[in-house]
Image 1 (cartoon, rainbow, N blue to C red):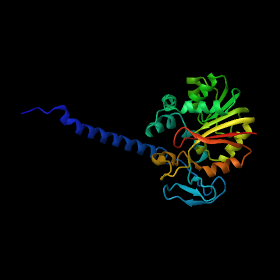
Image 2: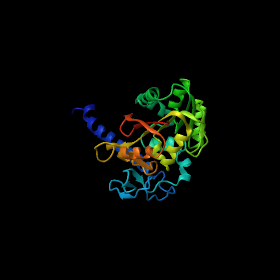
Image 3: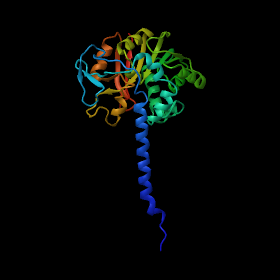
Image 4: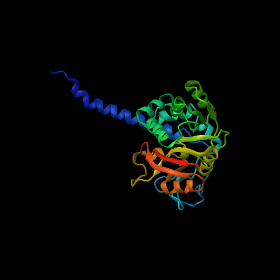
Length: 288
């Protein structure tokens, strides 16, 4: 009788491996969804622009503004809990692992490998000043701020949670302040950066007006946020669940709503033509 060869087991082993991966993904998705299941929430019945909300049948937690088209999280977390949500352990370790993303200590390397860091630096060189004070709100994991510091900029970072601030100070020796922008005292700046933060902001108009207040005349701000401008359903395709995250994302924008948001400030749009990836659209605005 012939002994079975290794190739006879290849397909069963491959199937078992696939099933294990599916099981692990399901477990992590369950952990991700249940992590902040009991966090206190508020009710939001109108858009940031004051518009009423229509039902959105693709996600029960969101409505669509009938005025500007913004997707609005109708039950975001209580703002007083944001410091806890974006903590070092809960957010930068556990939540990233559950979502299949690197933790804070490995996230910077991801930004280097996938081209995000290079694109951000390119945007600064193209649109920003060649020297001066830089503020980055939501600066973790710190690689962008460190890159600009090495280029001679005077850099100031902001993070919501004190443990994250300590990590950035200890590991990257960055000047980082703890607080929720715009409710924090910061110096005037020549360049304002905020990548993947605007969608988290509970009060985006206050956020944008505060950018203007912190910029010197002629200063530039570069922001990254998901902007729904593509003819795909659901919005952002395979990234739909990641973007429509009712724990983290309060507002998800369209081109129309971005124009309206900036139009309510004294800032001017310089460019909306760049992106790092799908759901990584870049906004360049300036202060006259």
